[in-house]
Amino acid sequence: MSEAIVIRSVEALEARQRSGELVAIIRDAVDGGSSVNFLADVTDEVLGDFWAVVADAQEAGRTRLFVAEDVDDHAGGRFVATALIMFSQKQNSPHRADVGKMLVHSGYRRRGLARRLLDAIEGAARDHGRTLLMLDTETGSAGEALYRANDWVAFGVVPGHAYTPDGAPKPTTFFYKVIDPQT
Ligand SMILES: CC(C)(COP(=O)(O)OP(=O)(O)OC[C@H]1O[C@@H](n2cnc3c(N)ncnc32)[C@H](O)[C@@H]1OP(=O)(O)O)[C@@H](O)C(=O)NCCC(=O)NCCS
Image (cartoon, helix red, strand yellow):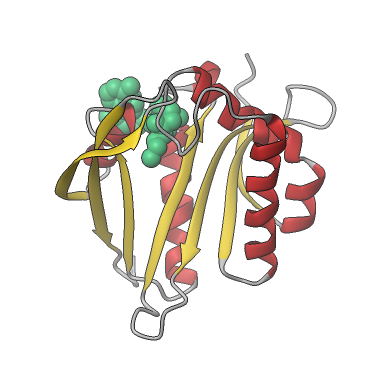
C-alpha cells in the first residue's frame, strides 16, 4: 500500500464527480457494522443521494468536506477517508459546528488518518470562526476511542439512540471540543 496519502478539502464539483468513491467509503463502514446512519441494505443510490445533499450544503457554504486521498492508488488517486464540518446556521450559535462522517476505509485504519482529518477540521473551524465543535458516536466504538484520544470531552450517553446496520439499537456518546482560535 502507498504511503502517499494527502489530507485536503474537496469542493462540491469534485465531490459530485467522485461521488462513487465517497459512496464506497460509507459502504465499507456499513459492511463493517459501524453505526453511521445507514442500515445494511442501503442502496448505492441512497448513499449517492446523501453525498449530493452534502454537495448542496457545500455550495451554500454550510459544510466543508475533507478527505484523505491515496494519490498513488491509481492514475487519478482514490479517496480513502472522509470528514465533514457543518457550520451551525442558527442565529444564536455562529461559533458552533458539528463534525460528521469521520470514516476511514478499513484498509487504511490505525495509520493516523483520522487524527490528521481532525486536525484539518479544527483548522477549518478556526478559519470560519467556530470555537465549539460537537459530534456523537456509538458508545464503545473505535470512534469513541479516537475522540477520547484527541481531547474531546464526553458529556453523556443516550441508551438505544441509534441502530447498527443490522438493526440493533445501541447507545451513543455525545462529545464536544472547545477550539482555541489562536492555536
Ligand atoms: C474511528 C475511525 C475513523 C478511526 O480512524 P483511524 O484512521 O484508524 O484512526 P487513527 O489511526 O487516526 O487513530 C488515532 C488514535 O485514535 C485511537 N483509536 C483509533 N481507532 C481505534 C481503535 N479501533 N481502538 C482503539 N483506539 C483507537 C487511538 O488512540 C489512535 O492512536 P494510536 O493508533 O496511536 O493508538 C475508523 O476506525 C473508522 O472509520 N471506523 C468506522 C466508522 C466510524 O465508526 N466512524 C466514527 C463515526 S463518528
